[in-house]
Amino acid sequence: PTAALHGEEWLSVESVIDETTARDLIPNLRNAGAVGIIEYPLNKVL
Image (cartoon, rainbow, N blue to C red):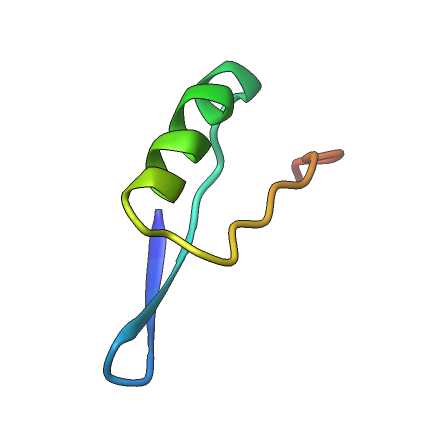
């Protein structure tokens, strides 16, 4: 994952994971307090 600081209390994380992992991980992240989660399909890898 790539993590970038946004202000003193915010962190931005980008990660590429498979769909089955996302189905389990996203609810866990939300339960832990994560906000602004964006999921989108990866169409092409160069």
